Length: 369
Length: 255
Image 1 (cartoon, rainbow over the protein chains, first blue to last red):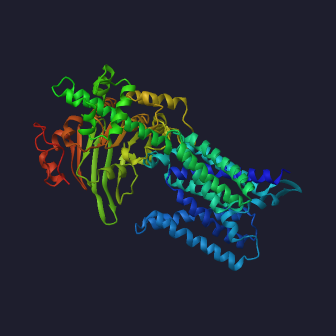
Image 2 (image 1 turned 120 degrees about the horizontal axis):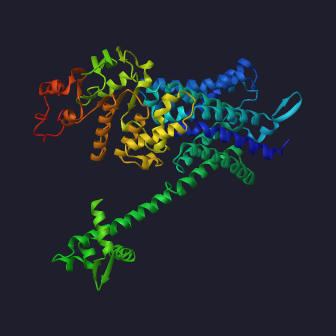
């Protein structure tokens, strides 16, 4: 048996990977909020399944709960299709109703079983290692780990088998339909996979972490790559890093493990959001700044080119002209001139500016653009 | 001149509740020609294509592709949706998108391989986009996106192509490239149905034209049916397009 510490991290990592796989497609299909709805409403399926089977470990309960997730999706679509309610509002209408029915059922009839409302939101990761999966007297692993691995394998199989179909139906529904790929079936297949994942992950990590693990890692990966396959791999990686990192944060500050992991997914996303090489905020700000100076130099060079060799060239080429007629702030004008000179676009004679040969070409190209 | 019928539409009606979008359309398209579908906004041009491909449900009527329902003839049909109908920020390369055209031939589960890559490269050559094969699709201009979509249709190696506004918002170079491509397709015996907006270019680009305004106004050889009277019927008399000779009038003023 592994140390409980290690087992908790292993369980969380496996679930993080399992969540990230369908999460990628939720994010790309703009259905992120659906994971929120599904991860809550499966509770109703679990509760009803429990009343019928009297066994929290029954596979029947598993399937029933997953079907509740699919039911959620179709209810949302049904309400949305009336065109009386928008889709986001429809999600907000359906899931609290189903979720709260489950909460009422638990509080009224299941008070003394292993089902409580707190655990629903944040799970019981800390106790997961003590619930063992035992076969013929052999202790194999924590039950949550076994379930997690099974779901991870199922998701992996689903995404690998139907990679091409998911990609096409996500990018271009019309073409998918015209080629006979039944986008509706692919859609519901994905929703079923999301639901199964939510049910499986639910017990260990709770619904909040399910949402965080399905959405934040893919959203971060989306900013890091231009390839779907890379996006999937990165999502899994970021999910696992969040899970392990979150565990140690919880360990150090002695806080809720699931809460720390969810926070960690947010931190990971935040870091990527700020520092992604091409699409991060910092890179964007840098680019905008560069464009601003670039454009100012283009304006300056173009202005000089326009008046080169004309009678007014003398007046138009003075530095003070930039501040007076082009209405540039003196500091800005000085900066632009300095940059243009160091780039070899212009040179300065007294307080007159003139284009270099390179500057002339640069200006001509700027005009043509 | 034209041999068999490629497309045969009978009594096709598409409605949104009790509001007809297409009203009892009958259409026969001989094979091996370029046909434009023209009509004012809201005339149901896109809906007609989608209904023929079974993408929207028809309230009545049917479409036969070479004598059989579309579902049995998918492999004979290539479809180019409107460029704006997809999310170009999707994480994918140009080559990836073009290979999607082969998915239908591959069927479920089988993955594209070397052969599909080669076909995709050949199609990119035809639309002069080979150098862009590895480019992320969000970095393309509108004209380049359209060419990628055309390349994707080309790899389908279909007999009939449906194109929804391929000329919409493309640069002059791309427009010429598309026209050349259409002519090559016709020369290879393919039938191409194009939803088109620019009335000016109809006689130059197309052999056949269908004028549509919820109902079919006329359909036939451009020389016979692309007349002022028919245009007036389709556009409700508010057509500034009058003489093909002067060529100065812009599209239409129909609202």
